[in-house]
Amino acid sequence: MPVTVVVGAQWGDEGKGKIVDFLARDANIVARYQGGANAGHTVTYNGQRLVLHLIPSGILHPQVNCIIGNGVVIDPVAFREEVAMLEALGIRTVGRLYVSNRAHLIMPYHKLLDQAQEQQALQPIGTTGRGIGPAYIDKFRRSGIRIVDLLHREVFEAKLRANLEENNTLLRTLYHTDELDVESIVQEYLEFDLFIDPYVTDTAALLAEALREGKHIIAEGAQGALLDVDHGTYPYVTSSNPTSGGACTGLGIPPTAITQVIGIAKAYTTRVGYGPFPTEQTDSVGERLRQLGQEFGATTGRPRRCGWLDLVALRYSAMLNGITELALTKLDVLSHFTEIPVCVGYRIGQKRLRFFPPDCATLEQVEPEYVVLPGWNQPLNGIVTVEKLPKAARRYVAFVEEFVKVPVRMLSLGPEREETLVYP
Image (cartoon, rainbow, N blue to C red; front, side, top):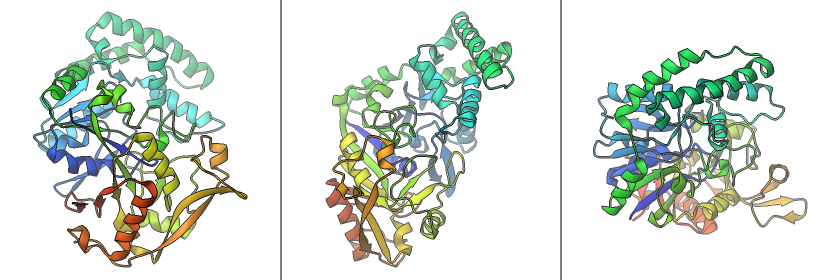
C-alpha cells in the first residue's frame, strides 16, 4: 500500500507544487489533505506559471487522478475559478478530480469574520483573510456546513440560517460591518451544488480501493510543518495539521499505508506573516535573497521574510514528520553568495538550547549560532547530474544531510520540471 506523503518542512512556500508535479509522473493519485485556498502551489506548465490553491499539483499529468480530501476547507469561488483556469488550458477535470463529500465549505461570513478579526486583533496573526480559520472553528464547534449537506436542501438551509443569525449579530454589533443576506447565499450555494456535483464522492472509499489495488498515492500537504496548529510556532500558525500525520485524518487513510515521507525545504528559509524567525535577515542580505528567489506570496503577493537556512528548525521538522528523505529547493539562489551561513544551534545568553522551543516567547529570544560555508559563485542552470554540481554546492548539501540525519534525494535548480536533479 504505497503512500508517499509530501510535506513542507519549514514555514511553507518551500516549492511543494513543483516537487509534487515532478513526482506525479510516476503516481496514480495525488490527494490534498488539509488547508484551503490560502495555500498557493506554483507549477510551470508549457512555459506558463500556474498557481493552484485547492486542486492538487498532479492535475497537470493526464494519467493522474486527483483528490481534495475531507481535511480541506473548500471555497466555492476559488474552486470554480481554478477549474475554469485548467479547462481553458485544455486540462480535463471531470472524471479525474474528486472532492470529498465530507469536506467543509467556506461561507461568506467566514471571510468577513477572518478579515474583521485580523484588522481589530491586538496580536495579528497575518492571515490571508480567506476565511480558513473561521471555517475550521465552525468545523470543530460542530456547526460547519459540509458538501454532503448540499444534497439535503432543508438541512442546508436550516444550518445556514442558524449560522447566519449568529454571525450577522457578530458582524453588526462587534465588527460594525454589513449583514449578509440569507436568501442570496442559499441561492449561491445551491447553484454551486450543481457545479460541484460531478466531482463529489466518498474519497476515503476511493482511496481504500486504490490501496487494495496497490496504486501509488501521493498525499500533498499545504503550508509547512512549522505552521502546524499543534506543533508549529503557535499562535502564528495555520488552522490545520500540515504535518505528515494530518494526511491520515485529512484523507481517511490508515497510518500503515504510508511508506515514505518527503520533506521539502528551501536551501535558505522564508516566512510570510508574523511570528518568530531566528535566522531572518532584515538588511540588504534579506532583500537580496527576496529578489533573487522571487519571494513573494503566490496567494497574496506579500513579500516573504528571508533568512539563512535554519537546520535546528529543519531537524525538528524531520523528527515531527518522520521524514525519510529531503528535497532541497532553490539551491540556485545561493549561487550569488560568496559565503553562506547556516544555523546549527540556538543560544539564550550562555545557555545553549537542546531542542526547538515550544513557545514563541522563547524562540523570539534565541540567538542563532552559525557555521559559514563557502559559496560556489557560479550558476547552476544547465546542470543535469549531481556529479556536475560545483564541489562547494555538493558540500552544502552534504552538510544539511549530516546535520539533519536525513538524505537529500532531490535538488531543484529552477522552476521547470527539467531543472530537478535526482540522486541515484
